[in-house]
Length: 234
Image 1 (cartoon, rainbow, N blue to C red):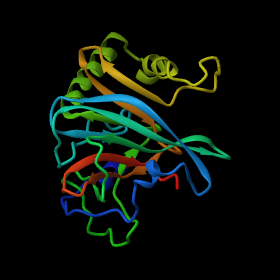
Image 2 (image 1 turned 90 degrees about the vertical axis):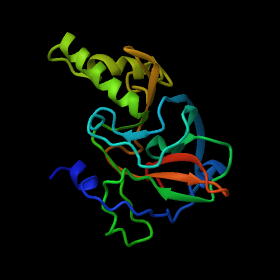
Image 3 (image 1 turned 30 degrees about the vertical axis):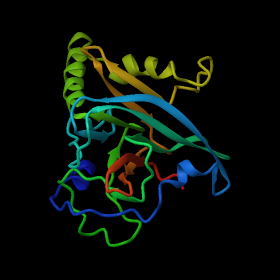
Image 4 (image 1 turned 90 degrees about the horizontal axis):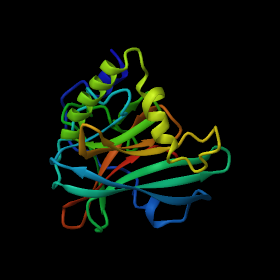
């Protein structure tokens, strides 16, 4: 059984609240003496009410949308960047913002196929697996359109690597210093060539590969106001 199956293999979808208030990333200028900065990656187009969060290079084809749904529309995606002393800039949390209301609780985002029966500790979670050092948010329709884009690209470029031969140059456009060969760029707001209105917002996954949880931010009226992926930097 692979990592994906271990994380998304069963059917217990009861909710679980985070023991941590993720507002801390956006209400403070430092956490644990680490300075924070903020980066807007643009707006995500949700043409349906279903959202997918996953590694866009390793798991996008088999990833399921979250069970909870939101209103269709375009919503900003904002990164809290931890400016660490020893590891440079690291993406600590990425927020898809549906409203300006503040979350009063954070509920683990689930697809309905997970088994959370063993999550007995306050800080335990189930997250999406990352094997390519990237996460993303996209709409369910976009996920399906991206599969067609990938198939078309590989048919036209047999033997190619879609990251090395396509995405690397796109990420490089968002490098802080495009002249620095070590700066490959940490994010990409990618509009699909075959469906130009649809986009996937991709971003570096904290310290790299692992499994990372998503949480729904729920406001005082019980409405979803945000969706975050926490890359466990702190």
